[in-house]
Length: 197
Image (cartoon, rainbow, N blue to C red; front, side, top):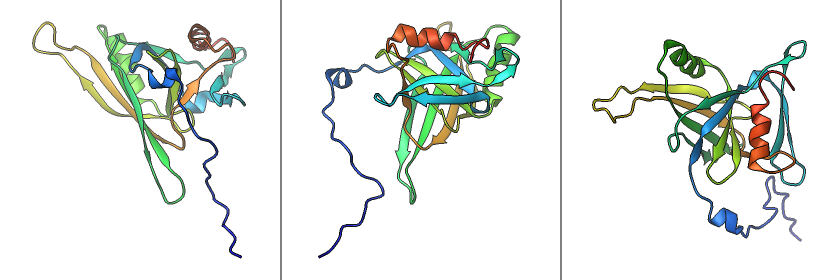
């Protein structure tokens, strides 16, 4: 009698999507929280929901921790997504974020240039569907393109677009604190300002 070999990857459950999934609207809100992988101490995943529910930053000095930095643009301008590719050993997922940012002073422009040059970034994005998603949480994203727009006419775009790309071993993850509300998730991320782990 032939014995079936043990599968290295198994289908463990089916999917009957919820109404929220079927009717989820697209789009990324104007806030994005960004940190660097080498400044992150750890993150945890909820055992039931499998969503990321905490992120802890390393201590920079006594009582002062590395932080998440908030980059704010305009509505309907940022674009994030991922593409999975099968491989010989495991699939990989290319995470891509295109941030559309705005600067008037040289100091503001310098902040965007620093973002483009920084290594191994992870990004929490707020979606219009009421979720927070995290891109690049394990290996990070790096700047691959920066485009400055001046425009020709008064209503032409005057933005700076920064493209971040990285290869991860899983799809972008949902972030959800224990309370599970969007307001609580935003409050949690806003509090990662260098004063708490």
